[in-house]
Image 1 (cartoon, helix red, strand yellow):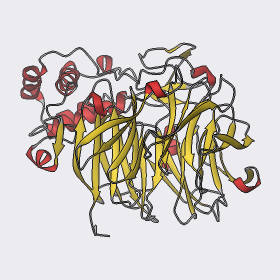
Image 2 (cartoon, helix red, strand yellow):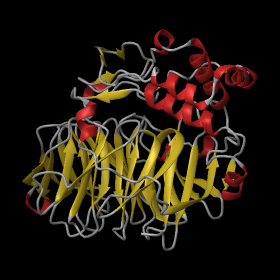
Image 3 (cartoon, rainbow, N blue to C red):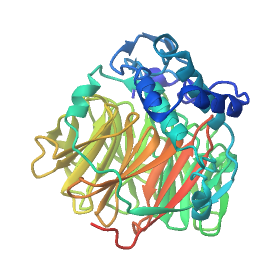
Image 4 (spheres, one colour):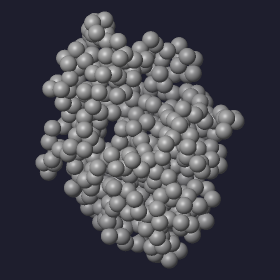
Length: 486
C-alpha cells in the first residue's frame, strides 16, 4: 500500500447502483409483468456483463469514471465500476435492475435477526426477500458486474480464474444464529484496502472498530459497549489496523503510531507512541507465537516485532516493498510476509526475517496471509481475486488456487481446529473452505463491504462485520454444525 493513499479514505467504493431512492416497488412489478420471465432475464442480463479486463485510467486524485475513493499509487480500476448497460442492453432490463436497486438499497426492516426471521423470508441483514428469489439473484449479479476492481499490477483476471480449483460452494459447516444491525454495530473502515477489523477472544467477546472507539459485542446477551474510547487515544488517531489478543488491544494508525491497552483489568493501563516515521502507515497487526508480542506490518517496508507489555519495538526487518500483512506459524519457526509485490515471502523470524522461500503465483498485491495450526499450510489473499494455499514443505507453487465472486480476497483465517479456512472478499461474500482438499465450501452472502471476519478461538463460531454506506451495517454470528456431512 503506497503512501500516495494517505488522503481521506473514509469513503468506500460507491456502487453505480447507489441512486436516490424512489418508490421502485410498483415499477419493478410492472417491469416483471411486461416481459420478465427467467429465460428472457437471463439472456438480457448477459448483455449487462462488463468486461472486467478493460482498465480505467487513473487521474492522480480520483478514478476516472467513478465516485470511488483514491486507489493506491499505481493502482488501476478494472472496468466494472461504471456499468455501460444503458448503451448495450434493452431499456426494460436496465429499468428492472435500477428498480431492484432502489427497492433493496434502503434501511433494513429489522434491527435484530434470528433464524426464525430468516425462515419467515428475511435475510441475515433484516431485508425482506420473500418471494423475490429472482430479483435477489439479479441484484447480486448486478453488484458483481458493477463493483470496482482495483489493480496494483495490471493483469488478466481470466488467467487467474483458469487456475482456480473447482469447489462445491453448497456445503453447510456453520449455521446462522443471530445478527444485529444499525449504526452502533458499524465496523468503521478507514481505508478500503485495510480490513481485518473484527476479532474474537471467545464466543462471547467480539471486538470491532467503531467511529467512537473499540467496541465489544456479546451476541448471546445481545449487548455491546465501548471499551476504548477515542478520547483515550492520541489526538487525531485514525486507526488503520487492529488486533485483540491476550486481553490487550493493539491498534495502529495512519501516522505510524501505536496504541495499546489492557482491556480486562479495571482502569487498564494504556500506552501510545511512534512505531516509525510520522509519514508511515501501520497496515496490519498480528499476534506473535510469543506471548505479549505482535508483528506489525508497515507501509515503509518494515516488519516490527513489538512487545506490548514494555511498549517497545524489539526488532525491525526491512523489505523492498510495502508490507501489507504478516503471520507467524504456531511454532515461530516461519513467518509469511506479503505486500506490494506479486510474490510473498516465507521467512525465519528467529533470524531477522531471513528469506527462506518465495511464494509465487499471484498476479497482484496481497493483503492477507495465515498459517494452518500445524504450520504445514500457508494461505495468501490477493487483489487478483484469488487465495493461494501453499504447502510450506514444497512452496515452489500453490497447492490450491481458490477464487471469489466479486473482488479482492482481503481476509484469510484458519480455524484453531485446522479443519476450516475462512476467506473474506472485499464485499458481499465470505467463504469457509474445508481443508485439506478445499473441494467443499460454504458461501455466505451479504450486502455490503466486509470489514472483518473471524473464527472464535474454539472454532465453534464465525463472526462477520459488514460496513456499508448504502446497505445495513451488520454484525452476524454463525455457530458450527456439530457433525456436518463430510
